[in-house]
Length: 146
Image (cartoon, rainbow, N blue to C red):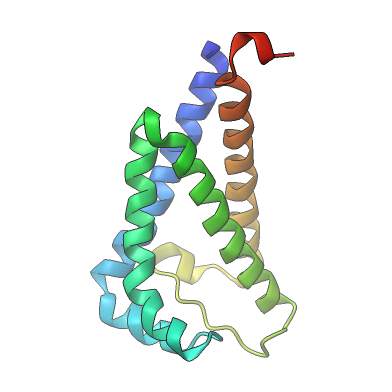
């Protein structure tokens, strides 16, 4: 892997680790509040019950996978999928598809307006897409590179 690509990828993984570690820890530190907020979401009832128990462990798994070079590709792809899902959900909220969408974000993200939160997610989504591009470009065998 070229040095520049490697450093950019390491920076992206570091930022994603901070994002997901913060997201998981803020949910777990006030789990009761997070669980109550999930009940207010515009989700199917079974998802309202499952999500509080699935999201923090999923975010922790993403963090762990991003820590190890062997697992980074999986972590980057899972980061992209999660960010895409959250961004679509926020976009639907901004578009007033649900009528109301309470945010179940913790910490500083809870203080963001919907527009700012949407832009924040778009930024991380684009950063993650760049990470996917770098991983796929840099980890191809030399005879397949263009």
